[in-house]
Every structure is written in structure tokens, then in C-alpha cells.
Amino acid sequence: MLKTNRSSLGSLTLVLGFAFIANSAIAAPPCKSADSDPDGDGWGWENEASCKVGGSESSSGKSDAASANSAKQTATPAESSKPSSGRIICQRTDSDPDGDGWGWENEKSCKVKEGASTPPVSKAVETKSAVEPKVGKATDQPLKKAKSIVLSGAEIKGEKPTPAIAPAKTPTKKAKLVAGQTPVASYGKLSVCGTKLCSEKGEVVQLRGMSSHGIHWFPWNSCTTDKTMDLLAKDWKNDVFRIAMYVNGGKPQYKQYSFLDNEQKNIDAVNKFVEEVSKRGMYALVDFHVLSENPRKLYTEHAKRFFQAVVTANKDRENVIYEIANEPTKTTWEELREYSHEVIPVIRKIDPDAVIVIGTRQWSSFNHGDYMEVVNNQVNAENIMYAFHAYAPDKSHQQRYLDIMVKASKLIPIFVTEWGSTEASGQHEHSDEWGQKYVDAMKEHDISWAYWNFSSDAGGSSIWKNNYCWEKDKDWSDANLKPSGHFIKKVFGQ
Image 1 (cartoon, one colour):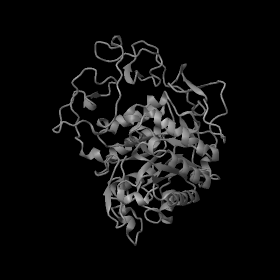
Image 2: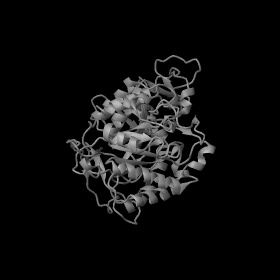
Image 3: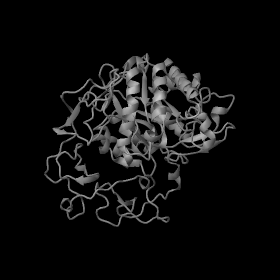
Image 4: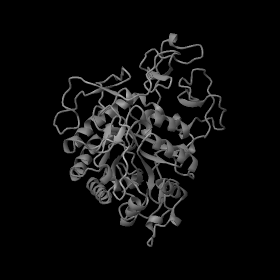
């Protein structure tokens, strides 16, 4: 979401991501139609923008920032499905897989009829079918139709071939970090089991750690050094470190530093980070950092070359996780599935078992909350998770995104590969209160996460004071942390 960058002279410039959020009005206009809010969350949709139920008009007349930028599709259900209140009534029994009383049909939310049988949240039950060899084994064959899952008897189906998700049963036993051992030594090779990330022993794992900023702006020996990596691994007790490799450098003057014009340089830089993270017994999350673009249309071949090289270089490691598209926009979910179906086999041919994280629509927000489009039409592969990003105190995120995160995590495996305790623009101070709410929710639901970001750029989300990483004499003491740095250090100690 938030992204900033740095010039060769050391000047820091805000670019891309949700920067436009800072310029949006903080209040949304009031809804004028009774059926604008079918899911009952207090937010509606009118005239291609969000509106607040019972809200008041803002001075600018603009809508809620994040929602105003979602390309929300509408489908008009039969009039008979609408009750007098304007709410759309669900017509199928399998529309509400999470059992919260609200379903999803015809690309719209619907209200489950009172007294109707709705499947409660439960462990997914695997069904057997005659299938080709499982995706995830080294093979030259294209992806095949694989297992489906059933939630309390209601088979989840999309318009495309029924997707696979790895072992349907989610364990209840949680893995514990062994005293004196690193995370990798304690948990071993990770896999996806049901809706959770699991250890080699099949116990539920929650990884917590930092994300770098763009490594072409903050390369090794800037913010990330031997000393700071030791700090993260030993003192801050990080389990995972995310390596953000920007595909496009942002503004034209930075393109020369990014993957588009320097593929081998960036591949070498990623491998250096993986090596340093691995030395310290942490998991390395390799992030192909697509930002605010359509990876299917622009970067499929780039992704194939990148992962071919990086996975080959690290094929003997058991601590590497691959994130194939950071924050896609301007795309459909079907396009992201197609992209995934092209990129994942490249990884699988070299590393049959690595965990792979797939970005979701609109800056990995499930298209601002439509996680059911993923649930009903999952990527046809095993050992995969779906990315969700949030900036806790942002007025368009807060409780709304927290609820989306929790609900989605009950149905599909999610990894919060990027989140922060500032607004999405990064230009405002962070919030301890909202940050802690997200930390607590992710802990309760065993959702792994990486915090944005380990740098000293000019945004409020970076944890080191502005330009500190470029000073000659650095002691990396707490006195040089920003408020967000003090907050996240405290969290790692919890």
C-alpha cells in the first residue's frame, strides 16, 4: 500500500501506493438509497463511490478514500429477492460459508433468511475425486484440476475448475518456539494445512517480523546490516523477514534501479538478503513487489524469469516463502488466477513444496473486502496462501479491514505480508491503539504478518528516524526509532 523512495542524492520522495488517500476527504457522503448497504456494515455504494449510512456530507463531497477507488461491479438480482427493507435475501443455502448471517450471490452481499440453515464456521472437509497428480510436485505438465473442499456439506464452487487447497483439516495444536533455537530450527519446513500455516510437525505457526523497504533504495548495508539483522533475530525475536524487490521503481528517475532495467542486479540483491536472513535462522519472504499495476498484463514473463533464478539459487533452503505479486490493481480476480497459474509452475518445478503467497485485488485488500470471490474461485494449486494488507488507523481500514481479515482467515489461508500502524499514505503518526488491535486479532487467529517497514525514509511508517540509515556513525539505539519503531519493538516483546 504505502510506498516511498530515495534518489541517489539521498532525498526522499513519496510515491505511488495509497498516496492519493491523503488527499481524499476523511468523511464520506451520506447514502441516499435504502439498498446501498446490503451487507449492513454501515457503508454503502452509490454513483461509483462509497457512502456512509446515516453519515453527513463532507465539505469536499468526496467519498471514503479506499472504497472510492474500488471498481465495484453490480449485478441486479431478481426483485423478488429484495425484502421491503431493501436488503437482498440470499437464495442459496451455501451463500454464507462463514455463518455470520450474510452471504454473497451475483456479486452482491445478501442477507440469510431467518431460520434458514446456514453453515457455521467449521473445519473444511476434504472430498475425494479422480484427479491428475497434485500440483506442487515437480512436473512439466500444466496445472490440473485438483481437490475441492466442503464447508459443512456446501461445496465451494467457482465458474472455473474447482480449486485446490492443501489438507482441509486445520490442526488445533500450536507450535512453540523451542528455547535456545531459531524459528527455522524450531518449526522446520513450513506448509499450509487447512487455513493455517503449519510447522514440519503439522502444528499451527504464526510468523511475525519486519518487511524491508524497496531494496533498490535501501540495499544491504544501509538499514539492513549484520548488526541490524542480528538485532531483529536475537533481540527483537523476529521469525520472518520480508524482502521487498520492486518490479517497477516508481517514478521514471528510479526505474534504472528496479528490476525492469536491472534484472540480474536485483536477483543478486535478493539472494544476498535470503542468505543473510537464513544465517540467522529466520524465514525469508521473497516479495515480487508489483505495486498498483496489473501483473498479468505487464509482468508475467518478468516474474517467470525472476522466480526461475531466485528459486534455483535457493532450492536447497527450507526457509524461503515466495510472494508472487505484492499489491495488484487494475485487474480482475480471474486475471490474477491466470497469472498465478503461469508463475506457480515455474516455482514448483524447482521447489515442489515451498509456501507461495498470492496477492489479491486492490492492493491485496480482497478488492476492499470481497474475499468470497477468492473463496469461490481459488487458485488451482496446493501449499498456497493469499495476501492481505492493511494500515490499521487509516480511516478506510480500521475495524472494517480488521473484520475482513478475520472472516477471510476462517475460510482460506491468509498471510498479512504487509501492514502498518500508520495511515496508508504514511504521512501521519501511527496509532498504538489501532496497531495493537490488529496485533491482538492476528495473534488470536494465528495469522502471520510482516510490518512495513525497516527503513529511515520520510514516511511515518518507517521505523528509523528520517535519513538515519545514511549516517556514518550509527549505533541503532532506541533513541533513533520513530514512534512506529518503538511500537513494533514493544509488540515483538509481547
